[in-house]
Length: 366
Image 1: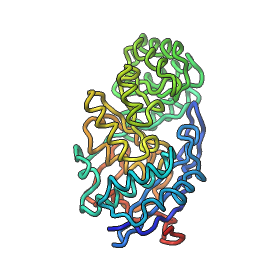
Image 2: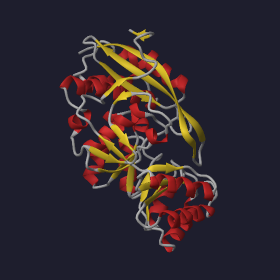
Image 3: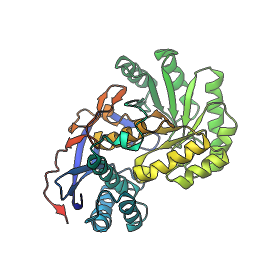
């Protein structure tokens, strides 16, 4: 099975409600999608969101990286030469992790199809289902409470609450949500780098004093402030999750050895795909550090790839794979079944995606 061409398109999916964090506000998923074609007529799908504020990648940079650098490097290669494909891709262009993730998941899709197995079983097959949280965007307290209650009514048992814009005022948001949803719903707090270290410690300690039972606090301070992350981790009891601070295996080692976080958030758009994400999972297993699998604002293709990896590895104990749950529609055919908080893996080979709107074999690269 040889790679013969890569087709590039774009997907537009409206969100149920605007996605608001300390870094940005987004109303639609507008992602780059690709289809890798082969000489056997098998196809593999990939997706990449332009998340410039986190990865530095835009639609233009993703398309250019794939079209002008990655595609020429891997077209003609055998899908079974997984190491060779990944080495060529990662040496073809520096950074551009979203573009690489897009191609990486399409290659893994084909690799598993070639074996006639669903990807999660190829990667380890720890479980056939994944439970995800649902993101509650930062907003007025009343709106966040209403959104939280709506999520719980839909079956979600874990909420990820976005904060980081108003310092100690965030405590009132979280307290109101806890009072509304009760003690049995897990609450994760994501500051998206919105606090400074001392402010983060004050806020987290206040949450602890109020016995709000927070599952974790994600990326409380700036991504590159590892000393600040270490200070927060060492001065609070609540588990601290490193997100934007960890893009690669070397970052994970540094964070773990410094004691700068208790948990690691793996995202394919940060790592450049499954191939590099597996290295972080392996490092986490060595150190006994649990991981969360997260996503950007991604639709079903990219989140399916992340779900397959989550289902494959027992060290990944938490999932923030709510992208499809935030979308108004599912434009794809096939893939894992997303039913509110549960993602059910299927026996379909590869990712299981069988149709992507806008990708019909035209405008191929060869």
